[in-house]
Length: 262
Ligand SMILES: NC(=O)c1ccc[n+]([C@@H]2O[C@H](COP(=O)([O-])OP(=O)(O)OC[C@H]3O[C@@H](n4cnc5c(N)ncnc54)[C@H](OP(=O)(O)O)[C@@H]3O)[C@@H](O)[C@H]2O)c1
Image (cartoon, rainbow, N blue to C red; front, side, top):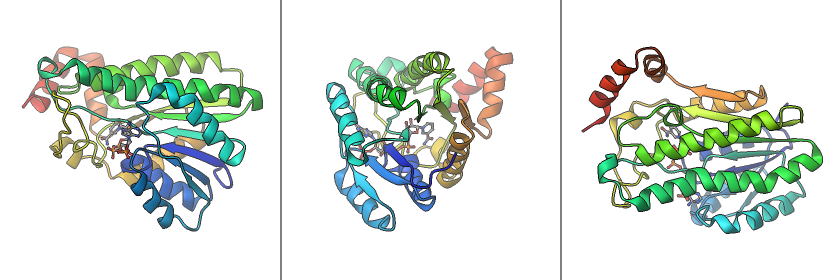
């Protein structure tokens, strides 16, 4: 498998992991379709990627009902889509007790219902061609809970359940689904996260600052997709946390509390 002349649709392409995916896949000769809400950021990226064929499709993925039309529009641009990488997402920085229901709803819509709606809408296209690759960026918070992430972690756990079920169902087809579980990656995710009242958190945190550089993270994602890995872990020290959670859960909760509760 390779990306040269393949049509790759990236959501969340205006920032962080999605933007870096656009840079690296453009260098590998991919034909790109880029989605996010920030139209001017996408236009700027298109200018930077002038050596590649790039189309932008600005869209607010919270408009779940309009996602089937978005998928039709994306397919219509080049007549088909070979790879979809869903990186759009938002995190949270608030204790569960201080988090309003609006935050739970919004993050469930963006991190769960939107990728489900997009996947549901593109599956018939993949099934018709018996080809296609779908990657969704989840999080280690989609595997284990962590303080200040109640709604984020719940939404990422939910998408795991949907995608793993799909992986079982499509097992005998030529459609591939990869779920990516990054630990801390150095992007603006913390700044762009929601506070408990639904406002933008607007600040970085030591977890993000200590995170893996985004270019290394994206190299690992691309390599995993090309190897058709069903699960792509991008973890450093978080591997130990996961191990503790599995084997000595009480110690995990103690350490997670100490690290995460401010
Ligand atoms: N960075 C980490 O430590 C980390 C760790 C684990 C998992 N992840 C996951 O990795 C993915 C990318 O995160 P990141 O670190 O790259 O964060 P980021 O820099 O904040 O990027 C988030 C992207 O999502 C897009 N987005 C947000 N709301 C949207 C909406 N309503 N409609 C369409 N697009 C929307 C943003 O674009 P606009 O603002 O233009 O809409 C932006 O392009 C997320 O799913 C995140 O949960 C990140």
